[in-house]
Amino acid sequence: MSVTFLHMRRGAAVSMFAVLLVASTVVSEAQNTATVAISVKDHRFQPTEAHAPANTPVVLRVRNLDPIAMEFESVSLRVEKVVAPNGEGIINLRPLSPGRYNFFDDFHQEAQGTLIVQ
Amino acid sequence: MESCHDGQGVGRYQGDATKRSMPRFSSNICGIVSRITSVLQNHQISIAALPVAEFPLRLSVVTTALLMVTTGAKAQDTGVYREIETKYIFGFTEGSGIGLEGEKEVSTETVAGFGKRDGRYGVSETELEYEFTPNQYVQIELGPLMSTYNISNVTGLDNRNQLKFDGFFTEFRYLVIERGPSSPLAVTLSAEPEWHSADETSGAPLVNYELEAKINADLELIPNRMFLGSNVLYEPETSRVDLGVWQNELTVGASMALAYRITPSVTVGAEAWYLRHYDSIGFSAYTGDAVFVGPTMYVQITAKAFMTAAWNAQVTGRDINDNGETIGSLNLTEFTRQRAKLKFAVEF
Image: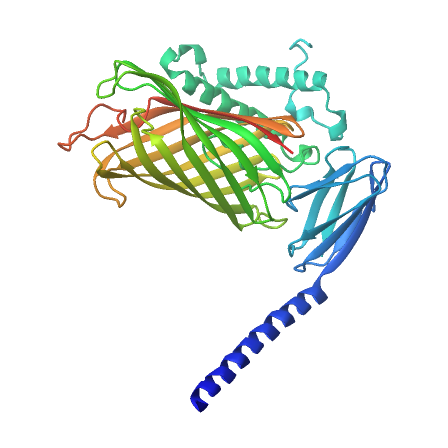
């Protein structure tokens, strides 16, 4: 009986450790996530050069201030997202190595910008 | 349409992408054509002198010449050419691209084989494909397969003239090495399980399970312009024919391909494949090999549509019979004289 109880306690301890490990990872990741905000108005990105930290997950918030839809697209970032008129799109980027990552509006290709990761 | 008299070539690309118009495109094509002619003359190559049966070879010569004459346009054009997805720019060779997260695509991809040792032989398989990229590392494709068979008087095969639903496929692609600002290499692993209800060569009814596993690698030689691609293929399959006996086969191979963007929307290139075939899933019961070479082309039709085409001719091979003897200089039992690929895709 006491052996079973001991096993249960050990199992509970392992489970709690696992939960704490996962929770700490989530908290750690949440703390290490960078947020970058850009907007589009008159088919131009503002700013045209945004900055983000290297090797850190990035949340990219794209606000479309134009009255028609835009599509944020980037081959090197490997994402595309349609953003509704006067709406906002949220794009989660993987940790990126340092460098320049170009992006554009696929519906109005004159709108171009760069994410500079340092 | 402009005439080809002013000698403007691809080396004239300047300015931003929005200024690229059809007249400039046509004048660049004219320049390319005149420079190809010049290069071929300088190297004493006469395309017309090649025999008709070597037409794919002619295209390869032209493609190679295109690569030679457009190489001079490299550095100054980097700003004009946007980044490109490399998956479909190499013909039969697949690049490392996995698409963009959130992107979906429908396409038809037809692969056809022509020519056996005798008679008339033309067989095609078309994938009606739905493709999507759920995250920045994984791509998934799936869809039904349709086949056509046009076979008459080919030794060892029944005559057949048929269009039929042939099975299903799905493909999983995982990006293991990503290209970055400081790394020109990208590598993707892919696995494509397939189920067929007819023999791919003869069209005879059977049950066939196949797994096409590949390493897809590419290297960016000139930023946004020139790419070197390579595949390593391992493709085991098992088939149950009428008598209920399961028969195993294996095709392995490797390829090298070069692709060059001659305009922002047109990429041309050439590729070579080496393929070996076994009558077992391991590497025993070797039945022969083949080498294919040929030109490739990729065209971005609109921002959301593209086509890719490739044509390979078998230039050498070994066809080994049950007695271990080699028949002819090509392997026309397991492979065809020529093969072609044509794909149209629309993204949304």
